[in-house]
Amino acid sequence: MNLKPETIEKIDKLVPRYPTMRSAALPLCHLVQEDQGYLSNEAMEWIAQRLDLQPINIIEIVSFYPMLRTEPTGQYHVRVCRTLPCALAGAYQTCHRFEEEFGCKVGHTSADGKVTLEFVECHADCGKGPVVMVGEDEYTDIDPEKASELASKMKSGELSNGLPA
Amino acid sequence: MEHKETRLIFKHIDEPGYTNDIDCYMQHGGYEQLKKAVTMKPEDICAEVLTSGVRGRGGAGFPAGMKWKFLDRKSGKPIYLICNADESEPGTFKDRQIIHQDPHQLIEGMMCAAFAIQAKLAFIYIRGEFFQGYRILEKAIEEARSKNFLGDNILGSGYSCDIIVHRGAGAYICGEETGLIESLEGFRANPRIKPPYFPAALGAYQCPTIVNNVETLCDVKHIVEMGGEAFAKIGTPGNTGTRIWCVSGHVQKPGYYEFACADITLGQLIYDVCGGLKPGRKLKAVIPGGSSAKILRADERFKGKLKDGSEFDWGIEDIPMDFDSLAAVGSMSGSGGVIVMDDTTDMVEALANINYFYAHESCGQCTPCREGVPWMRKVTQRMVDGEAREEDADLLKSIADQIAGRTICAFGEAASWPVQSFIAKFKDEFVEKAKEQAARRKEGKATATETTLI
Image 1: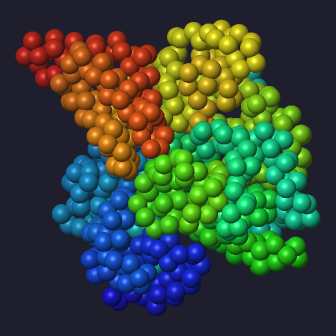
Image 2 (image 1 turned 90 degrees about the horizontal axis):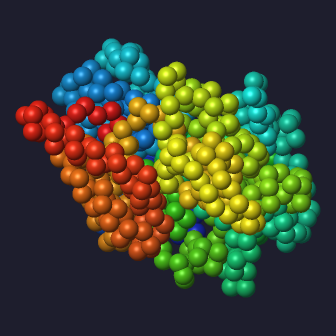
């Protein structure tokens, strides 16, 4: 495992703060995923070893929590909220526009690896729907027209991928 | 008509020039209540919270002071405090504002609460999607630590407590307090059975634990400030303090509005505060407390008796916005998420959307929920896909009836209530959907029509 020194530092600081080592499992999954982009088998084994657990203990949480991934995403990770308040504001139409723009179905990564488009459940900003996340950045009131604008900025590479440097 | 908000928790939210750093917070009187709290006896703070009557703002509305009273103090085990910041009930977006714009209010409320229950360690369980909120809280905690508002020997009181911000990872069930605790301990968030696992007795690490919502913990700060009795004067007896109503859906001005409990009716909230519906549209239905709350139909008459014995006869617009009134009309104030639907809404599609959510979020522990909720989703999906059957409404109700009350946690109810209430109130639309599709099939046309909500 080639983790960045700052990730190792964060992990070493975090683990002893918890009453049990196992409590650090989910935070470690986050930190390693942020470092690597996804959680490979090797990564899950590494986390298990670091916390004195079995790999299955990590696999069972990775397979439970929707935000943990075992595959990398495209350059842009686009998450469209589809829950009722966003749907009432037109989230499905927004998502259809993204599908057209990127030429890929929701739930998939575009052929050029540029974009992973996903539906997600409520992002708790329902007064400003449709809500779209690009990486960790939130965009609100995204109607199909604004979706096209965002899409063209992603195609040109102008938009930030929303991930901390 | 103007309705003046009572901004207690949201006093500084969206205030121009108000920033989320500690200096700004302290310039506005911040941390004075913590300074006061650590000079009080912990049991006196608990008594004030009990007197205040403050009820949990996360959904169930259980009196927080009572919850604290159940704490097992005799076990000799360490006590933990957990702030439930897993805000994920669809339609709810109040905690986000507090975390982003006024994180120190939450930290101060938490430290007052932690001191009151003499917690050894506190956690904020924040939903994973709040990336920015997580960073804001981490920074705020460092600021508070540097000023000795948390950490060792807080303000020279001899009391020590730290806060760990723990991030969830996209699972709704972590909002259920025992699921949250499982998640915190590093497991799948499968809720625990109660009894025996009431958190106040056997919570995190099998130690006595209090889990409170973000808004509830902010209330604690204000209770310390004004005293339990003064807090109890806001709102009505049994429905004390303010509520933050998060309005979404088909209104002109969706947003968050804080009012004293029962200070406003549902009609005033929708028409006066939120600017009503779009031109030419009529109100069809409202889900008043987050997507699991039972739906209210716009043309219903609600009749019955309130807790105090007084009779009521309300239309949807007359319902006072508080815990007991919304419970009396057969729904709940829940987490305060008011989802408004106008007459363009297809109720079968709306329920299909809700069922999709709950099927996605069932943790899979209990058979009725694991099997039943995805089944309900399949039925409503089939209906919108053009294969609706007239008996589907009864089938849906039958499945829902066999989930509610038969699961370890309240998710079974949360997933069943929308189905039960949609069928009770809009059955005609479910039957009509099947009839329309049958008619189109007869004419040789495609049975499915374009959908907007699923």
